[in-house]
Each structure stands twice: as structure tokens, then as C-alpha cells.
Image (cartoon, rainbow, N blue to C red; front, side, top):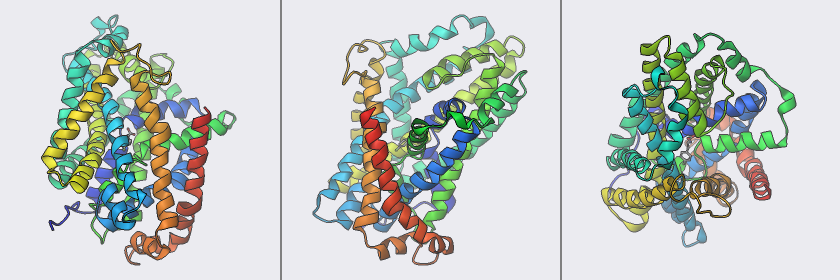
Length: 453
Ligand code: PFF
């Protein structure tokens, strides 16, 4: 049997997993959520959600992947042969493909904006055009589809080269680049007049804004941001060498993800406040508000603002790509393991599938905007279905399996790397308790809340 490819070392594994975690979720949602939900108070809540909920799920996925050295289907088939657990493979394949489909549409818009920034599309003399640019692009019958195709092709190309030559190489080059880009943007953003209000918006703790819905929102955001419940962390962990420490990789990834989200806040909000604009979240923040700000600032410093616009959209494209490759890899590992299909063929099949669903998502901003599923457009339906239901279900099943179906000795053996990882040995009792009781209970609570809402 061919030996499974492994990441070169722990930092390569962390970079790939952090690449999956750091994405649009960090850039277009986190900064806004922080400001809206009580600043530093929300950040503390988010940290708690990460430690008590997301980290245990992360570790559960890592244990399953590294123990079996297989993707979701293979892992379940190995640990619970001949049972319904192997259907987890199909659940995670579907979630990954649906997320990838709409994620790629947004990745496509980002590519378009990157090219526009290169063509100086956000210069001051075009300022009147800018507020309409996004709706024109999104509702256009074919332009966003071309962009979605380009983004998906880039994703497929990286994944086709395999774990080491494709995913690892791309992530280890681009992740440090992402941090450098965001630091440059922060320096610029903080130098703008009146930017301090943006800093206050992010850090002023306001405990009065905290309530049950804030708690659920923080948990949901942390869950999505760490790419949990889709099998991507499981799949990446299956390529981690047996002697590496899983807890260290989990902590490293969570730390990088949180740090990047906070940095993104300090890159974006000071600029937004300096321009005297109300911050929003989602596509509006990135594709309407920020280009407008670039144009506004460009009146006095055209060259600098053009450079910052280019760097900013480059950062978004790169962050989106490091996440999208993890989604595609999850599906590819399923086809390779269950169906014995060759990697390049698997990539091609999944490319075709996600391309079609992505086109439908894209068209739901234009020609298909009147098509509704359960009261949502196709894009929103895919987003809500995965974020509110499929990911939480996946996360629940992973922790349930590790907490209740695997033997405690096996879990300990894997999590502590056979007793070699001192920190994991010391924390095992707490971590096991979180995996077995707390995480599944909390996920059920989120699931029911989402259902009711
Ligand atoms: N974590 C990514 C983000 O914050 O944008 C999104 C994501 C990637 C979710 C991979 C799920 C996933 F499996």
C-alpha cells in the first residue's frame, strides 16, 4: 500500500490548518461582530468559546484523522466498521462541497476586485461609481461566473498537486505573507485621521451588550472560523506525522486564527471610522464600504491608497484560497478512499460539481434572484444550511464518537502521542471531559437555538 503523504513538520501542519481557518470569516465578520457585540467583552467571550467548544471539537477531529491516517469516510470505516458511522463521510463531503460552492463565488468577487484594484478602479475620480460597482458585478449574468471559475480553477490546481507539493507549499508561502500584508494595512489604517474611534469600537468592553444571543453568535463564529464539523481538520490531521503533538497543533491553529481575526479588525475598523462611515458586515463591508474609503482617501494620497487597495484584495484572495483548498481536499480524500479514484480525476469531478452549484449560487444575485428555497435565495440557503445545521451536526457527531464510542485509552494514546506529549498528559482529564460532555451539550444547544430561530 502506498504510504500516506505527511506534512513535513508540525509548523507545516499548523500553517495548513491555520490557512483553512483564516478566511473570509475572519475578515468580513469578526471585526463587525466585535464592535456590535460589546468590543473586548465579545473578544473574551470568543476566546472562551474557542477554548471550551471549538478546541475540543478540533481535537476530536484531529484524533480521528491522525489515529487512522484516513479522511472522514476511511476513519469511520476503520474505527466502526460496517456501521452507519461511515455515512459521516458523505455528510462531510456534502458540507464541504456546498460551502466550497458559495465560498468560491465570494472568492471570485475578490479576484475581480483584486484585478480592479490593479487597474486603479478605486481611484478618487471614480468615487461616484463605487457604491454601485458591487451590485453590478454580483447581478451580472456571466461576469461573476467567470470569476468563480477562475477562483475554483486555482483551488483545483493547488489541490491536484497533492498535500505536500500543493497544499503545504501554498500554505507555508502564503500564510506569513498574509500576516505581513495585514500588518502593513494596520499601520496605514491607524495613520489616518480619526482612526482612533475605530480602535475604541473594537476594544471598549461593553458588558451590557452581552446576552444569550451574543453567546450563541460567538460560538457559531468560532466554529465556522476554525473550519469545524466539515472533516477538513480531520482530513488535514490524517497527514500529521505520528510523533507530532496534536494539542500543540490545535493550540497553534486556534491562536493564529484568533490573532488574524483581531488584526483584521484593527486593519479595517480604524479606516472605516476615519471615513465617518457606519461599519457593516459581510459583502457590504469588503466590496462596498472599503473600496469607497480607498477612493475617498485617494483624493490626497492616490498612490498610497492604490497600493493599499491592491494589498488588501490580494490578502482576501489568498485567505479565501487557503480555506477553499481545505474544503476541496476533504472531498478529494473521500473519492480517493471510498471509490479508489485517482487524485487528478477526483479533483476534476468535484471541480465540475462545485462549479455547477457555485453558478447557481452566483446567479441567485441576478437572473435567479426570485428562486427561493425555504424563503432564502440559493446562496443564502447554502450558507444557512451548512453553517447552522450541517457543520453543527458534523461537530456533534465527531465529539460524540470520540467521547462515547472510542475507548478512553485509545483517545489518551492518540492525544498524548503515546504519552510523549507532557502537556497533553497533564491536561488530558480536562480535555476528555470537554470532549465527552461539554462540547456535545453546547452543540446541541446551538443546534436547537438555530432551529427555533
Ligand atoms: N474557516 C473559514 C473562514 O473563516 O473563512 C471557512 C471554512 C473553511 C469553513 C473550511 C469550513 C471549512 F471546512
